[in-house]
Image (cartoon, rainbow, N blue to C red; front, side, top):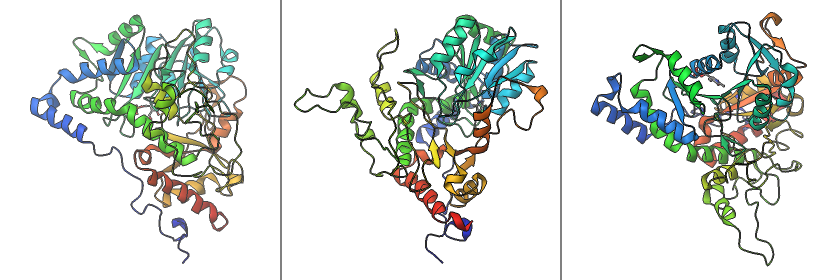
Length: 464
Ligand SMILES: Cc1ncc(COP(=O)(O)O)c(C=O)c1O
């Protein structure tokens, strides 16, 4: 038997024990559970943890109001209700979206209006919004999916000009930033999920984020029955989330770094040192110094899977000051430096050209968070159907999956209105693959295994 035969062909899996589980053991979470046991918080209606978590979520996201609740799905419904979405209204959303968001719009008696996604990252294409609006349009619902980021400044500008509300679903991207601002805080209402696979997990749970006091009050009122909030988060859930939130920034950087290693930089010089000291020039400024922190040192994973591909213009613009906004904070600069929103490609060694292409986020000063790492898979270039590719990688112990089903496919057209062509959403439906995040919490060697497994499957592509 050839030593490197893919597992699906009878060889030894790259990770014989399979992908890492989730959640990972965490001493601080353990301590939170023990503490909740010690003071009885585990069994109480009311205690310190829910209030503290809501305050900490608000502080982390730099918004005045947060509400914890039972799930991300409920949070999206509450957010749409806060914007007074109801029967007869239309809600504009991407045709490549989380299905339950589509169903939630229906649950409110409203109609989903589907727009296409961007070809470079398969996220809602804001240039398609105007054509989707009618007098019935009540809200835009947008999610940041699989490491992709929606161009929120543009979405908000369009929505504000038309007086349309925006729900920003950050379930897959807590800790990410768009244009220097945390995701979930651009929309009129932001939502989070604490479901069992999520980056912040309590098994179940969700939250809402608000800048606007009136929307916050309206949501509180809807969620309260007498003295109680219905569908709440429990004290114990809140207790285990608090230490996770404290680590979120550091882990966002770590995961982005693992993704950077996985896909490899092509640009020279390395874009993580965008302020090189000029010949005979001045010392680098503080931003440069920050960028050279150990977490950002050039990857030992030379070229990784990105070797051999053509460089593209680098959309990394060095921390532009937001229009009328604040300077980015040092930690934001670090996050930004670790970002993955540069043009990266898994490539030549694995397929010809861009056979597995990471999403590219073009909004400057943005930092992706990776609950999943989405890729644009080209079956023809790689030489395997998407389904066989995923099956072969899973047999290697690598948690790849196909992406979501697009909302307009396999559904009666009476259930939605398509605003224009949905060609890129169809493409996403057919070609999206994603890597689940737990492997990104490991070491460089773990993502090396991911690349090795992909390379192995590629070498034997003619044998499947
Ligand atoms: C984009 C998005 N929105 C909402 C949700 C729903 O969250 P929950 O499972 O907490 O209801 C999910 C869950 O995966 C999601 O990915």
